[in-house]
Length: 304
Length: 304
Image 1 (tube, rainbow over the protein chains, first blue to last red):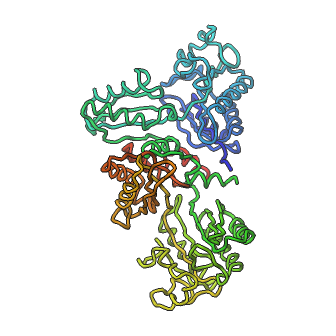
Image 2: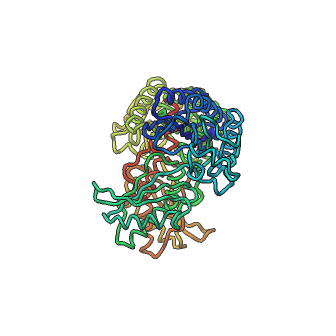
Image 3: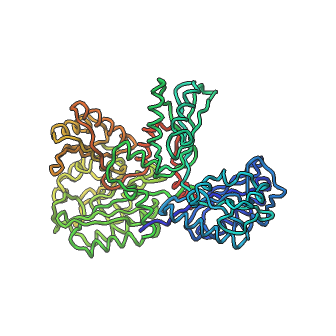
């Protein structure tokens, strides 16, 4: 009765200028039965493309391997330069649990894919985020520091031995970072004021790096054309740091300065569960489960 | 790119004691390609069964006709008696817009089905709820008053001429009520008090029949085993009378009596849009659309 598990995969590849190569990589993903390519976009100044696809573990794994084959054949980092930092031809491959699948299952998938990619392409792989047990390797930025050009020297140090594959960079493809993470929610709160200092103080109060919530990144910005300011956020784990708690904290902090919330914005995609948690919180709903949502019931019966 | 439209249909048939008949009716629905039977349940004291199925307009219409054929062949109201009031062998057939379909389209479907059923089975049909333009025929209870036994006399009066079909009852099948309505949400709010008068006063304040919101039915009850009281509600149009407005009004009314909300409960199914509206309200979200919900995006791509 359960719908097919859905894992989202969002590989970032170091090619943003040759559309025919990006299209060939997209086609390699699309051609795997059970996988749906949702989006792909290229940035030529970054010289980088982001592809988004989804499916159950088996098809997603097959699509990743197929993508590596195409990307590694076409991309040579020795002649690559763009604005975005990168370590590999296939730079980073996160697996994200969306529906009917746990984070643990995504971690397992990440490790299985990492092992296969490493042996099939003789490519060093670093695990990151939830797939890594090493605190120094949770953050993509830490792993990527030094980039492709600094990789040989970095890998020569014992603390940067890869999790899978050879202990030296691949000549043309460098290394890859593979892991599992929660879906990221881009969330902004606009304040009824033009005081940038208020937005910055609130951002500092709620973000992890300066003592706030564990899964919040935040900064204060001016929206000059509207004469207001914004607390701009990334929520990196909506289960552990839910939207409503962040919203209520921003609201209380704003009150200290006599400022109110004008509106909030969800930028791009948001998992249904993140919104449902908001409704449950404010309505003080007891004993609710996602199976009570009509659309879920309709979808569950697809496999009945 | 849009997912298949989903219309829910919940026929109530006057047979709750012969499982083989109910199963044959269920099978008639299930056998139509593009239709999914979600649920069916029978009540033998009511001598009545409720079936729930869903699909796009074409398949849903075919399933209704197929269901009528089976039900009319097997049910004779002249020998039927149960606790639940009924007018017809197939008593009532509502169409409910769930996803990618408007109420207007469900009204159109109801009228098309009503015309087909009337001509194919020589059966009088009354339209109800949103499918009826006649205020005296919006409520199912008004149409059904007098039941099968009083139908011939009722139909002899000009104001009870049917919307489709002959102006006299079908010998064994009576008449049917067909229409379109919004999904109904069963919603309860439990109060931190044992004072039944408070629950009753709040119910009176919010329900349509005594001056409250247009799409709220409500009553106050004691939950004796828990020593608390409950405002028990049916929300009959969550778009026009949204959950959050009802919740906030109950909360404010409770404060008059020094009472707070302990919790609320959603009983059974709820459309995702009804919960999303709650999240949007409390977060003051601007410019959100359902296409931003990750799962909707994933489903939309099924048809890409």
